Image (tube, rainbow, N blue to C red; front, side, top):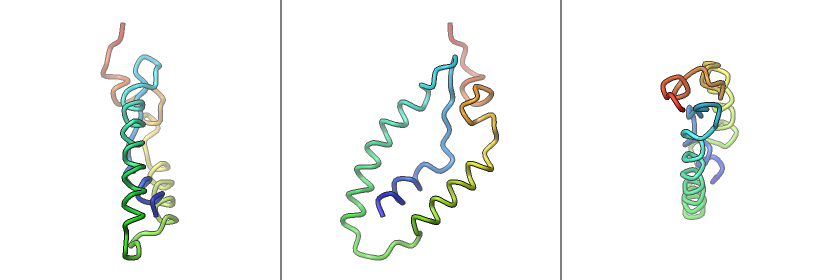
Length: 88
């Protein structure tokens, strides 16, 4: 349950390597995700009803979202902040 909660909140998020460094927003996102993971675990432990979406469906959806995502947003430095921010 907590894995499903943890992963479903990340659908569609991208990392933008600015100046070749995977920092924005990846490092910040990972720190926030650590907090989200703890909260998801707490929610799963307190849950009294059955989940409406299975972990398998969340994983399947994440896979499909990744396949549909434009290549320029896949840590290639060809989209997002990587082409908007000038460093140096």
